[in-house]
Length: 153
Image (cartoon, rainbow, N blue to C red; front, side, top):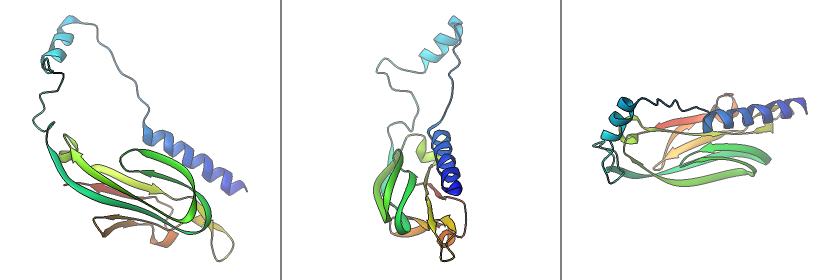
């Protein structure tokens, strides 16, 4: 019971970290304001040369194995945290655009715990496949790390 509570708290904390916490500094100086506004044309779009470009569509499949129910967090087009029935999979179509084309996007799945053959809790097995090719796994639950992959065009 204690391990389940600890895992739940850890997963919730990770979800908060993944969704991001930040603050925005505001500089009231007119010079800074005019510099910022000069990079944004009247149409409201930034002058970034990659802002209108889109990459090729990718099919990303998140999978978590095991039996029973578990909490699963996954990050594809957006962040999700759900109680699911195992085995579980989710497929998302992702298309990188703008700055994502240069730096990529990290996709991940954090599986909850399942009972191992010895009765002890362990991470459920997880995999990520991109366009049919497996790109990440947690060695059938042997690794405590989440499955993650940097998607790039």
